[in-house]
Amino acid sequence: MNRAFNRKKEKSWMHMPEALAKHYIAYNVKFLGNTEVEAPKGTEVVKDAVRKLKFQRHIKKSEGQKTPKVELQISIYGVKILEPKTKEVQHNCQLHRISFCADDKTDKRIFTFICKDSECNKHLCYVFDSEKCAEEITLTIGQAFDLAYKKFLESGGKDVETRKQIGSLQKRIQELESENSDLKQQLQELEEQLTIAPVPPAGSVSVQAQSTDIFDMVPFSPGTAPGPTRASNGCPTAPSAAPPPNIGKDLFGAEPFDPFTCGSADFPPDIQSKLDEMQEGFKMGLTLEGAVFSLDPLDGRC
Image (cartoon, rainbow, N blue to C red; front, side, top):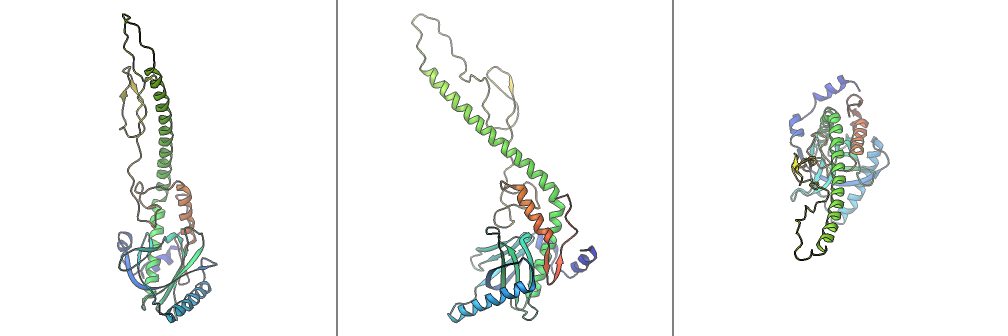
């Protein structure tokens, strides 16, 4: 897709970028539900899903059940579906997992999007009744996707290297902690042997026992600050490895990490696979009302 098309579409965006990057846009809608679909894109795919969920909702309505109201929160971090009063998150759809979004031209109230489920690896179609603002919500999701993709490209390369370094450091610290635990166990066993040593006979010269640390070093402690320390013989020992920074949880989806800010998330064990998944999702692009929204092909920066 060429950049001229993207610039043309950007002129039609409805919100300031800061509103989606630093906050979110909220809509109150009715949630008809979601259903599994066979493909990540396609008008006929969502038509079948809408028809199926409308029929199910008609049955439930005849039984006296009302269509539940939800709040949609749209930002560069995804589309959240919340209970309006308690603000409990019912579904959290990350943007790189959303592949298709459309509003029904024959019914201005209905809009849908297809999202790949993070657990069962299936594609689910979500259907909503939006009180005649379906097109606005669809464009808002498209704008959020566009901004998130740009942000991911800008920060991706730096993120990958930083996360690899932190992952390597965390692994090395775990190895050192394991070695330290083994040394402490050996030291404890030797101390126990010293406590049962025979008492010297009366009148003999008593020699003060040397340090029980037979390794003549300060055991590694990952909690100590880096810097030279001194062992019992007065020689400086190697500084202990510094622990990684205190990393807080992110706003990106359920639990993973914020792909746009280095050093501000709890990293999952397999960092690279998560980034690869995001890369593939953004590379596929978001089909919006029949137009594919994506920037230039991903390059080696991510």
